Image 1 (cartoon, one colour):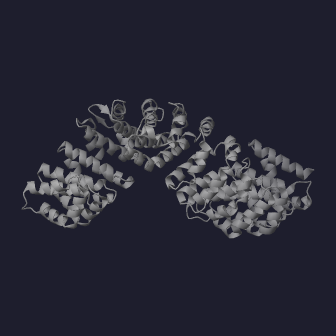
Image 2 (tube, one colour; image 1 turned 120 degrees about the vertical axis):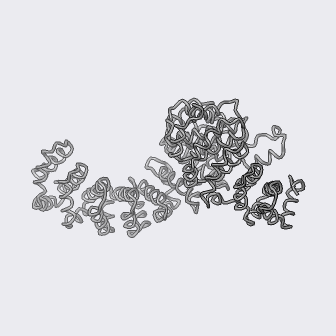
Image 3 (tube, one colour; image 1 turned 30 degrees about the vertical axis):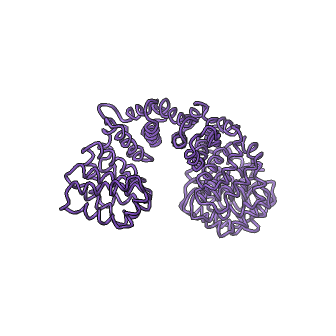
Amino acid sequence: MKNAVIGNNKQKANLIVLGAVPRLLYLLQQESSSTELRTECAVVLGSLAMGTENNVKSLLDCHIIPALLQGLLSPDLKFIEACLRCLRTIFISPVTPEDLLYTDSSVISHLMGLLSRSQYTQEYICQIFSHCCKGPDHQTILFNYGAVQNIAHLLVSTSNKVRMQALKCFSVLAFENPQVSMTLVNVSVDGELLPQIFVKMLQRDKPIEMQLTSAKCLTSMCRAGAIRTDDPCIVLKTLPCLVRMCSKDRLLEERVEGAETLAYLIETDVELQRMASITDHLIVMLADYFKYPSSVSAIADIKRLDHDLKHAHELRQAAFKLYASLGANDEDIRKKIIETENMMDRIVNGLSESSIKVRLAAVRCLHSLSRSVQQLRTSFQDHAVWKPLMKVLQNAPNEILVVASSTLCNLLLEFSPSKEPILESGAIELLCSLTQSENLALRVNGIWALMNMAFQAEQKIKSDILRGLSTEQLFQLLSDSDVNVLMKTLGLLRNLLSTRPHIDHIMSTHGKQIMQAVTLILEGEHNIEVKEQTLCILANIADGTTAKELIMTNDDILQKIKYYMSHSNAKLQLAAMFCISNLIWNEEEGSQERQDKLRDMGIVDILHKLSQSSDPNLCDKAKTALQQYLA
């Protein structure tokens, strides 16, 4: 059987159909079977698992994993190795749920114990761990069972395969995990700290896979804060190694992994972004990612060409991601990226690609570049980027919607020439619907974009926004549990209530509801920033010609303004003073009556007190207000 199935998928499938698996498992588990027989059974099962995904499914359906795990309790090393090899093959398959490894905690501790038995047990167990470690829960279990201490010394094994698998284990254990990363920094093997061992594995004479994986380990440790971003091992070793992986002479997979890891390394650090952008002409080098596969003459191998055509989208995704990280903060780098040949066209094409990952990466790249005032006014306008962006926003999955709506926020800033056409293409309706999303980031972006849209806008746009949102939804947003949503909604209200005719118009139609909302917030448990924004909205209302009356006839609100004038926080005092100044301004009709009413409330006494304040702003504002009474 063993010789019949090696390398022959058809034979493997035949044997499975004929019912060989339950029989093999029976023999494997029989105490009366000789160790040689049990070992041969494990070898044949391992060979069957090497076939198609359907083969693996058939093996899983026969409960092969518990049988093999049971086999690991045997005293015989050859049998243990055969069981581990088979387990490794099964766990590597995408159809096997990783959680099957964690159903019984004694399994992990037993595997840790087997690590010392032979180079084969070390290689297979590390491979099982690195394939089954998906996310923080798995990382924590392996960490708690001593994975770091048990695997560290394998990095100096005489076997290249063992070293490689141990390294892969650390790259998945440390990914986005501060606890593991902080531990790794201080572990030493034969008197050498792990980061130094990783740096040695980065050297050019090591296999490419080893260089890449150790760069991933150092990257994760750096992002988790265990290694500083200006540490020589990052600046002089890891970053140049990853840039090297992006070059033309590397294989497609290496270029993809190199670019994605580099994008992650430099994502939040402007110095690393600057350094990467001037290393080996990286920005120009990435442009090649879009010209793949290269001319046919250079590719002798048809199989390779087929593979590269299938995977070329991965290169585009990686390039967009890296451009997004490079351009996150620095204006000069953004300019260089946009001046790279056909860059804007490539992004626009990327927005409509069939692969969702490429679309997401292209939107990310666009978002990063949209932080530039200069580019919003030029390249973004020349390429009418807003059109494909609006298209992306129609029924996209949430992860794309979040980044696309963030980009839209930038395109709606007042100096952006795209603002007009975006409005005409039905953006208000789209953004109002985002504010109703279950997803917090989408609610924030929807309301943020509306806030930008309302800034210095004409009255029609403001009315359209209010109509689109509906008073009900406005209240919903003002009572949102997230402070970002609340702050942006108040920002929107403040932008809607600017310039007198607009203030009067909006308050004449929505005055009652807006005053209600303001009262609610001033009475609620909110932080200083929220209350300050709310008082600024009141100050805007007090600046209206007819809108003023809504404050003057509302004793409750007047008492609140009085209360905040004597508050312990100077920001709130100042905001309350703005309200008073706007209400008592002399040149406006009815100012005398308003002044009298406020004097009777004791406002003038507070103004006298504030004019002695040690805070120069408060003092000036109080004196100016008192002059209105004397004029």
